[in-house]
Length: 201
Image (cartoon, rainbow, N blue to C red; front, side):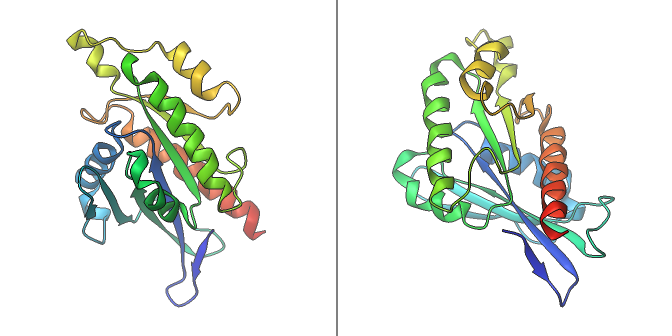
């Protein structure tokens, strides 16, 4: 749900990073927070639970232009990955405009990825959002672990498991090294802005 601030002439977009526990959501945001430090107008807030955490910060992208004369402000959030924090996940999704689903490319995480994507589908439904209608980008994280001889799922397998019906943009990535972290963000921002422009017309 787009938030329009008439006073500051800003449109606020909320993008949520979703996915299984320890899949790389937090590492994505930490990398972006370091990379774009000069454009971030708030401190990164971390809400810690016992074994997990939710992060968020405001991000002011440069050179994106405006929508109807309004500047764009992006709010980036992560959700806790563990199932026991599902109520928090639902809360974080409230008012979401776009989603990055961060899948863990390790073979042992295959079932967890599918379970988490199904959970996203269900939790979006509680906000009357269809997963097929919201801007969504998939990120297959931790592909760099292949170099450490850790069994990694083939991209074809990840696509078949997670993207055969959604057919959304997908990136192989390493949040730790920064590989494709920024392209993932740019893609979800451009898709979300296009979606918002359609709604405002």
